[in-house]
Length: 99
Image (cartoon, rainbow, N blue to C red; front, side, top):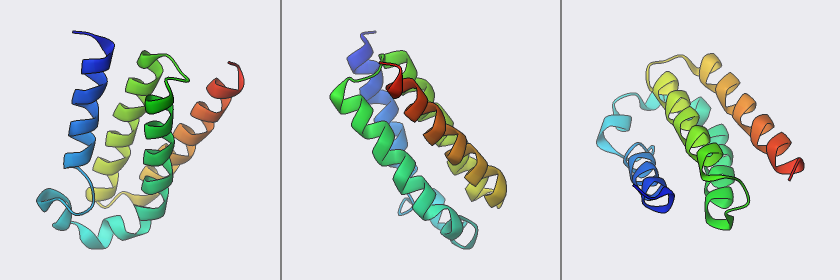
């Protein structure tokens, strides 16, 4: 599978787990604290994916970390999720800074 198609699949999965999706509505109280962190991380991952400013593997790994954070939020582990978001943002910034 081409990296472009793979990225497309990853982003479809990300879109299905957005805060407005049915599965996410169930844990609305837990995820409300994560919303701003999620939006910032999602925008950063999306920007690097669209710009192709980082290798596809790095963007895919970041997208998977974003999903991990969303699952943690949905499960009520907001502190863990926020730590994942912070680490994700730092890693993307560091990786982009080395290019």
